Amino acid sequence: MFYLRKTVIGLALGVALSSGSSLAGVIKVGVVGPFSGQFAQGGENFKQAIEVYQAIHGKTVKGDTVEFIYKDLPQVNPAQSRALSQELIVKDKVSFLAGYFLTPNALAVAPLIDEANIPAVIFNAATSIITEKSPRYVRTSFTLWQVTAPLADYVAKQGVKSVVTAVTDYGPGIDAEAAFKTVYEKAGGKIVDTIRMPLSTNDFAPFMQRIKDSKAEALYAFLPVPITTTFVKAFQDNGLKETGIKFYGPGDLTQEPDLPSMGDTALGLLTAFHYSQANPSALNQQFLAKHRELFGSSDKVTFFSVGAYDGVHAIYKMIEAAGGKDGLKAVNAIKGLSWESPRGPVTIDPVTRHVTQNVYLRVTEKKDGKLQNTQFETLTNQPDWGYPGVMK
Image (cartoon, rainbow, N blue to C red; front, side, top):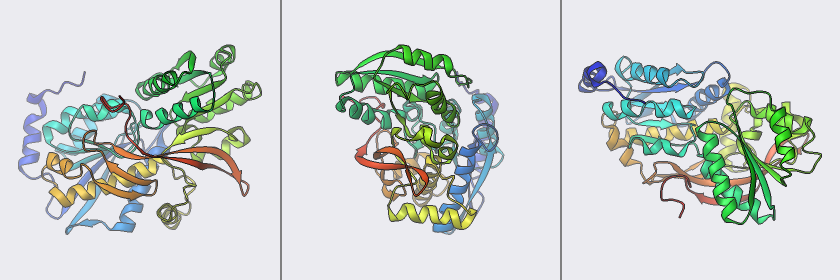
């Protein structure tokens, strides 16, 4: 599907590499993300987190200035993802690629990064399969398996006997469905219905009726931001909350910028995720304070923000190890790297090249008149449970 004609771009890539993939004294990083359109909040979070990281840690590594170049990719478009990434490699002569908000766009660049020997640091795209497709992928965000498997185990331990799953019908949604079903059924629970919803839909009434008709005790749902808000409101508006159906999901459902528009509809939602603004750690408070200093507010900080912030940290460490000249050497240098993030302790797993991290069980509640995701249990050292061989 993503076959690359070497006769078309191979020569250009070879020229870029032979002349050095960065200018003297400047190492360039190309960031592909949604800076307009439906998912623009994610792109804004990427850019602001990069600026926060550089404000705290500086813009130079071993004497070289690190420069970020942004390319707008507002929707699912693998062909455009390849084209923008190729432009960054050949024309802009970047040493690293980063960003990639949606899974199909991330997968599309695997042949490019292998031929150019350039790392791609995934700030968000959350399907487990991505890092299998190239040894030059590194992911600093999360996967749906990583946050859903421990949640499914928790739901089963609460004595919930039947669940209906409802997910958006694309890679991460299918991963979320598989993760919940695998772990929950293994623990003795019963999945009474599996619903897959089109990525483009905003009309959830028919699905709410189907959930109601399932007679399940609980719902597990995953949808990408920002359509999560509409789904949560539909759950309330169609009377499902009144029937006593419990509502579980990953933290995409209740990200902080969306909570004010959800209002009391969000109260009591139980989610599992790797980041919350309410994380009380000193490093998270520093992270939020720097956002307020630079941008006047930290209200829009999300999990996209920490994915980018930690992605820049990984890039800086790769530059320390290999400059901007050998992508595979750079990636190999950070396998097993551990550091403290605003989300908590993280480690780049040497096999999956994906972060091992805490997953927090959270409940949405109101504190001092403001809705927040309050962490009430920490599940430490969670790997990507969806990577082959990790879940036995």
